[in-house]
Image (cartoon, rainbow, N blue to C red):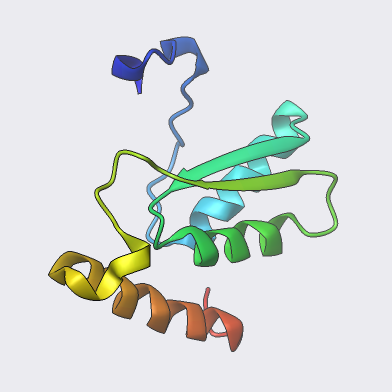
Length: 108
């Protein structure tokens, strides 16, 4: 991030290691509460956007925190033509399965 011009003072490293998106959402909720944030911009893989957004919004439901999701431009993903690349196929099947689990209430 610093190579992109983000000052070190603006970078927050969580105190714990996360195993999944739901844990990341919990940490984001804690940080938003502690720091008085009202708007959060989450940048992630274009394929991870939907599920990450679901997890973040679910965790922050009932708060005044607005969540905005953006796909990174630094990943060579092509969601519009996902079937043309093995890497994109893997993302679609992996994220698709996890998204179904989240929608069914099985995602942590």
